[in-house]
Amino acid sequence: MVSRKSGSQKRARPQSGNALGSKACREKMRRDRLNDRFMELGALLDPGRPPNVDKSAILVDAARMVTQLREESQKLKESNESLQEKIDELKAEKNELRDEKQRLKTEKENLEWQLKALSPPPTYLPHPPGIPAPFSAPGQVVGGKLMPFVGYPGISMWQFMPPAVVDTSQDHALRPPVA
Image (cartoon, rainbow, N blue to C red; front, top):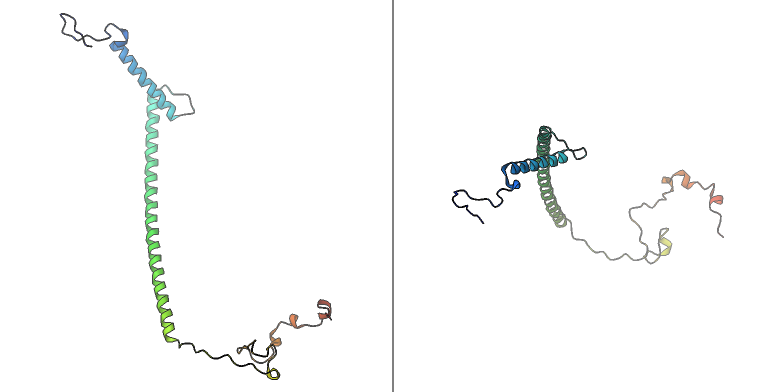
C-alpha cells in the first residue's frame, strides 16, 4: 500500500496530512502512555492514597520498594537455607536413630538366643496328686484343684496388715451379721 508520488523520491505515508500521524502527535501519545505508567506505578506503591503526580517522588518510592523487597528476599533465602540445613541435620539424626534401633534389635535377638542356649530345657513334671482333706492347708481344695503357693510361708500374714484393717471394734456397725 505504499505509493509514490510522481517526481518524488520519498515514500508517501498512508495517513499523510493527517494530524494523528504527525511527529508531535506521536510524541504526545508516547508521553501520555508514560504518564499513565507512572500513575499505575504510583497507585501500586501506595494503594490507599491518591496517585502522586510527581514523577521523581514516584521513582524514589519505587526504588525504595525494590530495595526493601530485595532485602526481604535475601532474608527469606537465608531463612530457607538455615531451615534446609536443619532438615538435613534431622534427616541424618533420623538415619542414625534408625541404625541404632536396628543394632539394638539385633543385639536383643542375640541376647535372647544366648539366654535360650544357656537355660536348661524345661522339664515337665507331672501334676502332684491331691492332698487329703485332713492334711490340707486352709484355702486348699481337695483333689488338687487349688495348688498351694510355695512362696508363702505357712504362717498367718495378719501381723503385716495395717492396724486399721485388722481392727474389729466397729465390725458390728460396718458389717452387720447376715444370718
